[in-house]
Image (cartoon, rainbow, N blue to C red; front, side):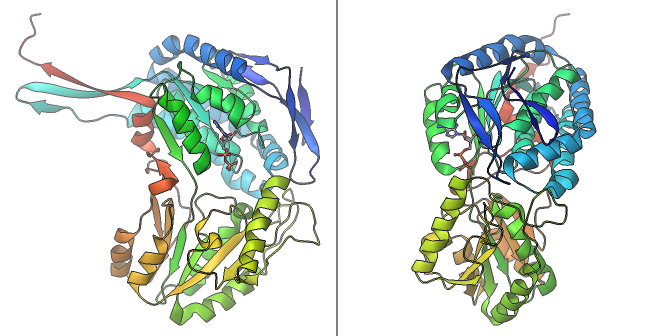
Length: 487
Ligand code: ADP
């Protein structure tokens, strides 16, 4: 048995296929970003494990898809109960695995994991309906039929939260699931497998396959036996998955990167705007939704920068297990070097680091200083490419037209953050922004009933509420002539 004790918690490094642990001949090391030590060895799946997991999920599908919504919901609430019981363990393991703050895991992320299950369970039972409508005496009735096996491919920045945001609706929809977590953060998916087992989920309904994206990930997404692919990750990977999926015309839902703008007009509540701007460093900048391009009206630029720098200076960087820490390490050496590459190239190209601008040499390891660039060349890499680290940029504008042009001036369209004291301006400007989610005078307020996804290269499709069921199900309209019944 390939088990490890991580942060005091027993975790299996093996796959979970058909209700049992399965190992692979090869393994890979799971390294903690906190001290770059190996904390577990993980089974490295390939095409054989992908086949086995899809076969198990297909075998389980007929019974699971025929289970009543009430029973599916009951099991999902049981999973949520167990997540809540083990909240601290899950939080500790996730922090060891991806370096994100223990404080956030305890207070926000893991409660949200449980909520993902409760929300979609309740939504299935109470809210999933469409009113019948009549066409010349014919009744139209819409149903959501489970589609089959959903393959879920997830990233490392919020591993269990993002995984369960897909797992929960897929299970509620009556699909069976194969989850492939990111190779940099494989552990909490493994703990979730234990939880689903203890909750009594029938074997094969939920499967976890570990391994690398271009190996087992590719085998899963190109598999002819699956019905859906939901992926959160980078644009280049989405292109590869779309290509794999094309062979079987498998429908895909993609939630991809962003380079979202945070627009601050001079009439905004400046205290709140500055506080929210500094929040964009959360999770060491590894948040797809972050408003990383600060677009500030020129008349308040100096005031904004002064207040921003003062506030950012109060952020405490350090060990993510310490509950007082505000910014932890980045996820891996490779990613850290990538972030530093962006920063050094931006400096070389003439951008001014108003704040930070390099690794935190006092802490060493994978700690990168919160950085703010001003004066970057329009169209340059640092203003257009996703860094996914604690690196923000500042640009100024004079008019609404200029603000909108800057905001929409990348290939992305995931989110937008808008700060203004004028509701009419908010409506005017908001209507012109390209984004799947727009926050006005707030940030990161999320409701699972809301559609979530990206425009342009930030994504394909929307999930959340009914949109999730629309994706995981085959939506069917039954049109019945009401006058031809004979019994
Ligand atoms: P990031 O840049 O956020 O690490 P990636 O897109 O590389 O994002 O990875 C997100 C997830 O996609 C991970 O689980 C990774 O293993 C998986 N992945 C990477 N390449 C492929 C691929 N070719 N096919 C399927 N999944 C992949």
